[in-house]
Image (cartoon, rainbow, N blue to C red):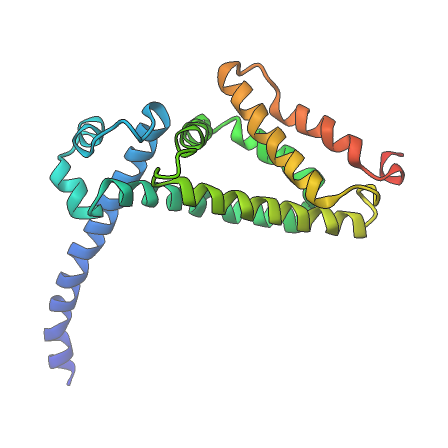
Length: 209
């Protein structure tokens, strides 16, 4: 039995290695495409142009992703995989009022992410854009999450109870998008300070003492 197991082992390893290499190459292409989309947008680039910017062939991109739209989806999923867990942990441990400014401070160190978000948000206004549905769903999720966190902060006595949580959630989301866009034009804009200033206005009076 031991000899048979040993004999079979190289074959299994051989099958895993090409798969691992393929996944690693796919991840590298996603990261490179992320940078290209952040700088140049998505809508006006062909799959050949994207490949040229990345330094690969369009056949390689099609081999790994199948289409230009699938590549964009992989980039958006990759971003959420990188940023989502950190944000959720921060919310659970520090609460909304401290989390939002901290997220803005972190965003100041990832310009490419913010630029990609702003570029796609402008392009994807068109219903036929491949990211249109993704961004709409993400916005709904963000607003819903903010509203739930605001309600939790009200229950904890940290946010004024007379505020409409749904309205406040959309205000915070809109302020984040607007301040980030201003920062892309002028990096002297202190994004965290602007969010802290706004959130100070909605804190419950007892928290201000």
